[in-house]
Length: 192
Image (cartoon, rainbow, N blue to C red):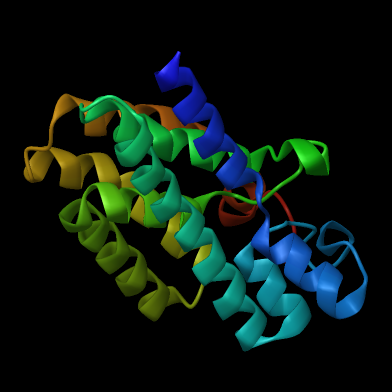
């Protein structure tokens, strides 16, 4: 029961949509009706500028970190619960219950959660994403390639099974949330 409560609390942390509340506070509008229509840091940057991206990004990273720390504090003394807190928080970010299940893509939340869980793995993913962004100047492509490199990093760094399971749960959710960007990258949708 404690495990389920811990994972539910991680989901609720993920539901706090930093970009949504930031844009609502500054403009009175729903970020999901502006820019790309996404409730994430990149769209907050489109609407509010670079500072909006920075605040939303840090807020989303922070809730991923908090989910893992909360799981370590509340959950049983095993590596599985903190690992499973990451996909729970990502699910909350992508499908926030208070926003009728229309959130962001989960990249920053996953980055924060995996950063708290496994800094080495996260440094590898962030390095790949940063390199791709530096070459392409496309955040969606950088995030996607970074995400796809995560299992390779986990394998190369010989991470425990709990980390692979967390990735196996988080990655499909995030790829689903990235589906519009995937279509754009494949040339089947207009670029936003």
